[in-house]
Length: 321
Image 1 (cartoon, rainbow, N blue to C red):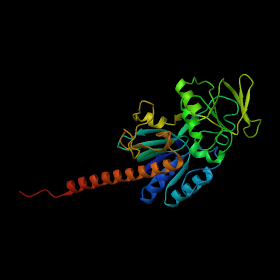
Image 2 (image 1 turned 60 degrees about the vertical axis):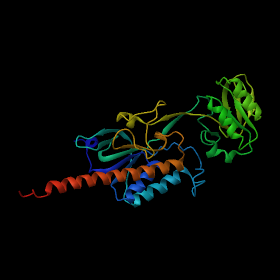
Image 3 (image 1 turned 90 degrees about the vertical axis):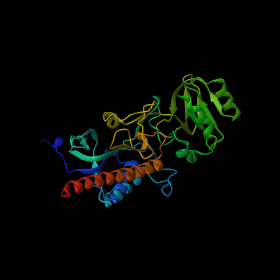
Image 4 (image 1 turned 30 degrees about the horizontal axis):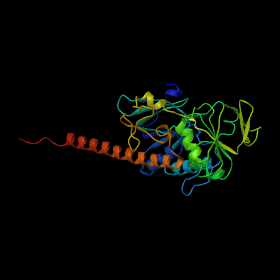
């Protein structure tokens, strides 16, 4: 065998993805004395953000610091942390799964948990990606307090932008909706006008940054509107190749279907965090990972008990006539 085909000893669980969801699951499983491995490429979705917000006892913590602490905690209980990427997960002939790493070994696992997150598809406008997570934002609950009472903008790329503009009034009385490519209905205009949200028509050319903080929005006709922060609605694309490769069912929006504990429609496969729920924040993703770990461990206990009963029955002496 070459290196990429080397098979390691069996794990109880292999976790693909080491963000808040994956590490939380690994921590619970390791504390349950399960043999668990976490494979992570070190590319978290929230890396551009300066702080995590709304996470009880961790508010204001840097995303990298949270993951560093989580990795240390999981490793402290015996979880194996592997820097890398999972290329493929396939069912094993004798049961369980084979988790193939890119340029690394194949990890046999009784169960797999996928926590690979999602990718934010951003509008292709100059300035958006450069300032993403700093003053070009998505979630008001994550960032609204930090830009409170400042001039805010909403870049409309889909109908959700209207509700986002109305929501942002909780944090600022100066909110402008840039219609950009969205054609507003009469009802939407009435709702915005009733709450005194300014509407600016016309396509947006760029966000004005000049290699520094956001200063405003420039429209295609040359108009500029000063803004301190702009909220956008990214196109959320789940990183679910591993799940689709296993045949996990999806809903009518294309997201993997799971139960409340993260169990998918494929036995032995679990999915948690943003790969299954685009609305999941860091704190909820961590909770999803914990719930999945408990569900997985209970299932393993049931499986082990059934095997023990079968062995006991096969070893019992035959009854005498």
